[in-house]
Image 1 (cartoon, helix red, strand yellow):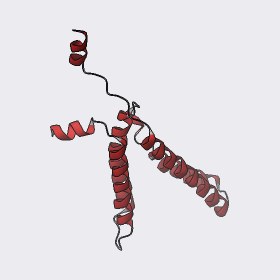
Image 2 (spheres, rainbow, N blue to C red; image 1 turned 120 degrees about the vertical axis):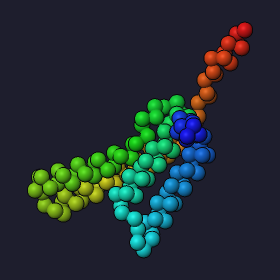
Image 3 (cartoon, rainbow, N blue to C red; image 1 turned 90 degrees about the horizontal axis):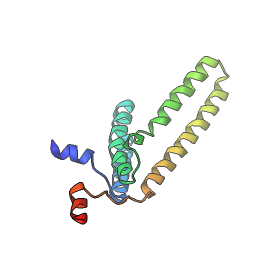
Image 4 (cartoon, helix red, strand yellow; image 1 turned 90 degrees about the vertical axis):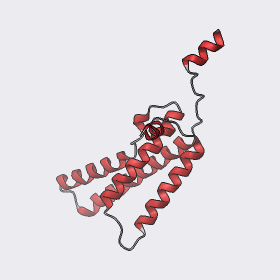
Length: 138
């Protein structure tokens, strides 16, 4: 149990981040291509949970707050909000679908860009432990 806690509270290098992101994407694509795929909601929430662990570790290494990890949730929230607005507004269906597709494309591009930026950020040097600083100053 301690090992899991240490892993979740740790940091990851860029190599580990990219390996994990590619592996998660490959598993997700593989599951979607099965003749009988798992329920979409289960797969989406499971993928998001795993992604949050991967991203939080990388964010810590880059010196950013770990709570930024669920940024792909933006796409889901925007998608649900747009569909709600289209239904409530009574706009013509085709115009509403065109607007929804444009917003989905924009949020997908934003998330892809954020994933790339997170993978390219350099890691910050770890802060020395208090006992190490004490040894330096004697």
